[in-house]
Amino acid sequence: MKKISFVIALAFVFAIGAIEASAQSKVNVRFARGASSATVSGSIRGERYVDYVLKASGGQFLTVVLTKRSGAPALFNILPLGSEVAISDDARQSTNWSGELPNDGTYVVRVYMEKGDRQNGRSSSYRISFRIR
Image (cartoon, rainbow, N blue to C red; front, side):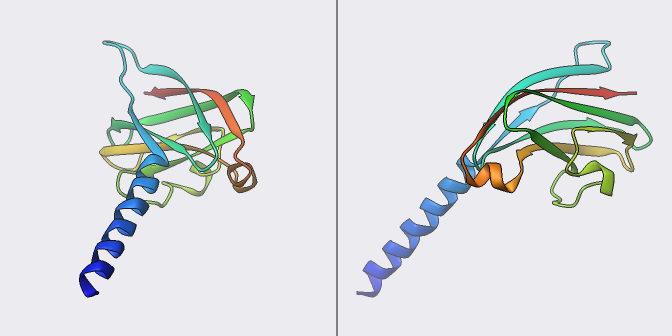
């Protein structure tokens, strides 16, 4: 009986992990040689979100502009890699942000929808631009 309970519990953990893993995707932002900006198109639906990952140096200025193409509006947060805390209050729940990066490292620009739109399974199509100077 204990063996069966353990197997069921283990299956449940793997199922939850699979659901959480499918809830997001990661895109490495690459700038063309000599370029200081890049633009990417994307889409999200329901609970899904996209993490745009880029490397930058402390003291550089990052500008991010998110433009809705269709569907529900999307927002973004700017987070240091491995953190769930935005780099500043104005770098969360934004559609347009520009500011100085505090440290050398990898940053995540997480695109998502507001809670009501996520819960209702709405979708959003967008274009996001990144500029580092």
